[in-house]
View 1 (cartoon, rainbow, N blue to C red):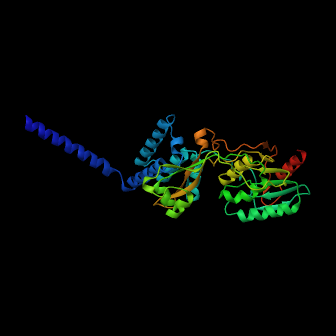
View 2 (cartoon, rainbow, N blue to C red):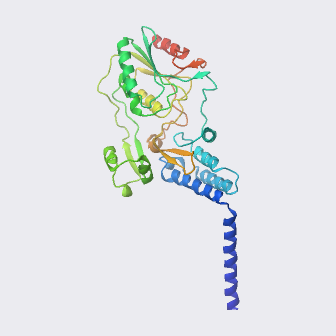
View 3 (tube, rainbow, N blue to C red):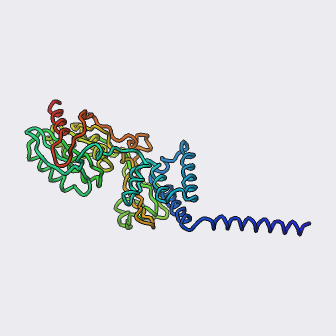
Length: 367
């Protein structure tokens, strides 16, 4: 009896092993590779994506786990491409700084799964805002500034041109400004600055070895940033900017007397930081817009994860704003203007003086 039981156990074990081998062998190498790559993206989100702990909470954890399970099942059965699964997964977080990019099809697929944004190409016949520094009339000067990508020197030049104009009113039009570097807008912010009591929201860095390596920071870079240099034993979260730190400059300029900042739904990232900083530091500036900004500023300082199978790359943020901790995030709504522009969309926004600018100029004169 004992021998037969021993033999039966071995037969069952052998059958189970055979079944597992058959099941695993039934999965083609391509699908197995898809699953491995997809799980690498999940690992990226859960271990390196800065605000993950705020995005996946007790309220939505079941939904999140169900999404992962469904996407893995779809990949296993060949019902989805790996790229589509990644787009659906990353898009679930609703963070434009956590994005999937590659060729046009991949990028479009990612935007299909995330929050909607206004497509001005469908609303404005020629939407291509250009840098512009121009005196509209004796009272009002226009600076159009649609990019913060390495444009600080240009901003400094525009400031000098405005100062030479003698105009008491200034319009800074940042429609289409998808961001770049925060410091690019600083010369314009210094010009608008008139409120020394403004306190900034803090910024927290999720300190992971992978993000440090992808940033290609050296030990000297970490020291300059004030970060721990012992990467292996560093805390997971490090304060980059202390919450409530002041935003101040040395000089409050007499001009402009009145200023306006024009926004649209294509203002994002450093463009939105320009709006937040202006609202924080300048009481003489009014924010105008028909639409809110895009909502892509609660996270930042992005790294790039490049898949082995190009052209797909994933951009993810390494920092989050303390607005998450205070419950005051703005990404879901975008930044709301002080004054809604009631006009229809212009037919052309390039290097021209469009009807929105003239409407704002007239409104400033009435104040």
